[in-house]
Length: 358
Image 1 (cartoon, helix red, strand yellow):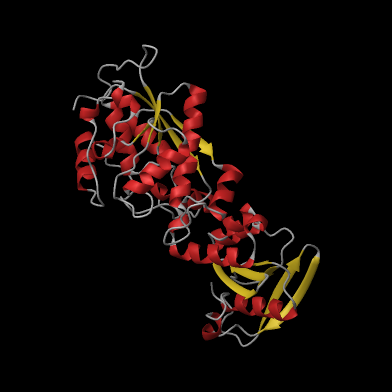
Image 2 (cartoon, rainbow, N blue to C red):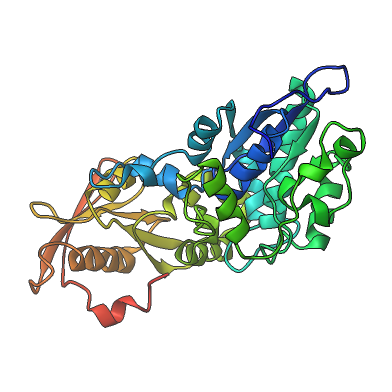
C-alpha cells in the first residue's frame, strides 16, 4: 500500500472523495479509517457519546489514582493519531429509548448491538447528507461478533439504515458485495481488505505496520451494556419499571456502588469509596440518603419510598459497610429533604446480604 494521503481520488463533482465513518477509537475502526486514508480519501470520524462508555464514567468519578489512559476519549485519541477531524455527537434521549426497547433484542448481557449499530449508522448517514459526504464506513469485521457481525445481520443493518450501496466495511470488503463507491471508482476495491473471523492477528499486524500502537485492548470492550454486573442491574430495573418510566439518571446510577433490592419499588445503592460518595451525592435531591456520621461511611441512596422496615434494613446495610461495622449497634442518619431520622441498628450479617443483592 502507498503512504497515507498519497494522491486524490475524484468524487462525484470532481473533488476529493469524503468518507464519514464511525470511530470508536478501537483497533478495527481506526484501521478502517487508515485503509481509506491510504487511498487519499478525506475521512471524518464520528464518535457517539451514549452515556454507557466506561472511560467517560471513570472520568466523571475522577478517582485520583486512576490510570489516565482509562479515562480518555478513545475516539478523540484515534483522530489525533490519524490526523483526521472527529465530531463527538451526543446520542441523546433517543438512544436511551432504543436501549430500553430494542427492536432486535439484546445480546448476552444488555447489549442491543444490532439496534445500536443501526442507530449510529443512521446518525452517520444524516451527517453525511448535511455535510457533503460521499459514503459511510465502519470498522465491522465479518464473523467477529456473534450478534451483529454475521452476514445476515450486516445485510439487515444496511437495509434498515436506508443507505444501501453507500455503507462500506473496508476491513471485510472482499467478503461483501461491492458498494457504489467502489463501482463508481471513488474507492479502489483492490486496496480494501478481506479480514474475517474473531482472530485479530491481521489487524494487529497492520497496526504495527502503520505505527498505530496506542489503542484499547482488542475485544476488551468499553461499554457498560456488555458488562455482566451492569446487565444484572439493568434487567432488574426493567423488571420493576416499564421502559417509559425509566429516567436517564436511573441508568447512570446503575454504574456505581453496590445494589440491593429491598422490595418491588425500593432499591438502595451503597457507595464503595469517596469518589462514589461524591457521585451519588449529585443525585441525592429528593431521595432518602443514609450515612454513619463521624466515621468512614458510604452514602446509601434509596430509589423509591422505603417503609420503616426498609429504612431499618437500609441503615443496617449502610452500617455493615462503614468503619463501625464490628460494633453491635450503629447509629445511622437518614435524611430526605429537610427531614432527618436517627436509626440505631446492628450491621447486617453478610449471609443476609445475598438475599437482597442485585
